[in-house]
Image (tube, rainbow, N blue to C red; front, side, top):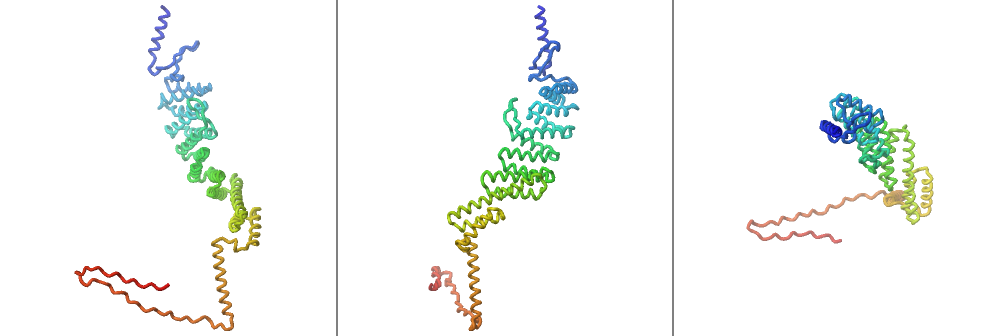
Length: 398
């Protein structure tokens, strides 16, 4: 009978628990008494905000970051207007980060920035978001149902763009905009990455990050030019590096930018030299000289330029200057030669002893005026006969 009374008492006690504990787990531990866990295994929320804050801090001190995350979050959920709600919101994000759940941490931080724009931890929240974005950018794996899955550059991009949107004038915004470009670049989206770097130059031109953005614009174009020889991309890379050196000559990346320019110049020279040799081998000397001259003009003083000049001189001796001239140049030279011969003929004629001067110009006879044909009108309104066809003038004999 006594055993039945105990069971009845326990059943009655459970039935008296508040409705919010429904689904909770009730457990008795020797020396600790009865405890109640939430439906997800978290500790129950205390009756006051201060008591809940003490519990969360205790869990944090014990290194139980997952439980501390839930405790801080429960404080915000149950006591949203408490004076410690903003602090608890930020602490929940910190605990989630320490537990390795970066997505959850970012979500709490994003909520903090939206709910507490004047909170004491606003700057710290932005800084923590920035750290999480860097972790993803460096290859941190996202969690799916609590399991680490794969790195996400998309997530990194979203975090950095979110920082620029939420705190555009913070000290982290220029670097966040730059890292958004880095994330896009790692996703294989060069056009979007360049747009992100250009946004750094547009919005934060005086920030030190602007130099890195300008350099990276050139680097993205350089990479595209190397993957598939694209002269347009090579020219854009050259312009970007030249702008970089013009605006940031003392940057630590200046030597690398100069090396990149040399490699671009060498690539152009190498391509022109290969084409010149191709035409030279097939005895198309006119085309070969065009590309040899490109090498000479593009990289003066280099060994390739010396080789090209030597070959051009040899071809001129072999086939003559006129045979090596291209169409417009040859036509221009031909017109100059004709004018030179005409002037020389005038000089020769004027130097003759019987030269009497230029002939006197005779007036050109004016042909007789031909009267225009009379209009062929009907004789009266009643005359409806068709008009005769007009007489066409006789064409001159060829």
